[in-house]
Structures are given as structure tokens and as C-alpha cells.
Length: 190
Image 1 (tube, helix red, strand yellow):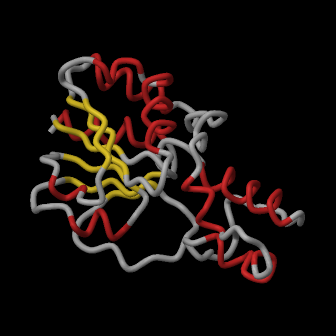
Image 2 (image 1 turned 180 degrees about the vertical axis):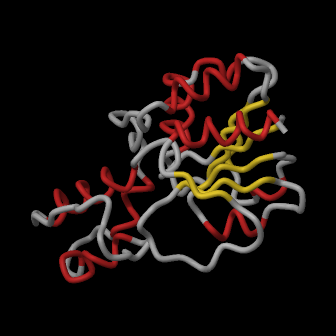
């Protein structure tokens, strides 16, 4: 099975790092509550508009950095689950959008924590056109991405507290990587 796997908020909690970066740059302290009781804007920069008003930076500059992923770690159980899927013979495609200069940091992060990506049946694909990748299953936190996937592609939504457009068609919401692994195993049993 060809499995597409998003990176940000699906494999790594880059939102926490972004929030912390904005606190540091603006020299403010704002608590980051996760999971949030109330839905949040997907663009966390909206919570720092006033603080960035007089700075030469903007919130999205975080994503233009060259070392965004250098000190981040995968979500719990992600390494084990993806290693199991790789050993079971699935083709794993790490598919992610990039902004600015963080491509090298993101690619090196995937290689560091998921070294099996170097095997010929796996790949790292950096594109905004995730729907163009031939996936039997797509695991992503973004509803817009899942909505764009071709018919027949199973959609697994990694839950986040962020506001988004409605998710269309059949899909499964998972809250962690063990749930994702169970869903895939259940799918294989059919």
C-alpha cells in the first residue's frame, strides 16, 4: 500500500516550536495550552499580531528559518509505527509543504528519525500538490489536503484543535499513532 504521511502536526508538533519562537522574538509569555479546549486559528501568528506590529519580523518568518526542525522530536509512537509499516512492505511517502528555507532541516529531520526513508520504496516529497501523489491512504492534519485527495484514497485525519474547512467524504479521525496503526491493521484484515 502507498501511504502518504504529512509531517507538520502529523509527525511532529511544530506548532509548539512556532509558538515558543514567537514568544522569544516578541519577548512575551503566552501559555500554549494543548489540547486546547476551544478551537484555535490554524495560523498561530494571529495570536501575536500586536506583538509583531513594530518588529522587523513577522510570525511566518519561523517557517523561513534554516533550522526549524533541528531540535524537534517525533510524536509518541510515530517512529515505531512507521518502522512497523515499512517492515510490513508498505511504501511510505513523507509529503510536506515547505515555506522559505526550512526544506533541508525538514528533510534531515525525516532521515534522522526515519532512516528507512532511504530505501527505494520510500520517499520524501516536498510539494503543495499532495493530491498529485498516488496514495492509497493519506494521513494528514489538514482538511483541505484530505479533501483534495483522489477518490479511492483512504483519508486518515490526525486530530488537531485548529479551525478548518469541513472534511468531506469518508475519513477516520485518529488522535495518536497507535490509533493510526490499528486503523491500518484493521484495513489490512478486510
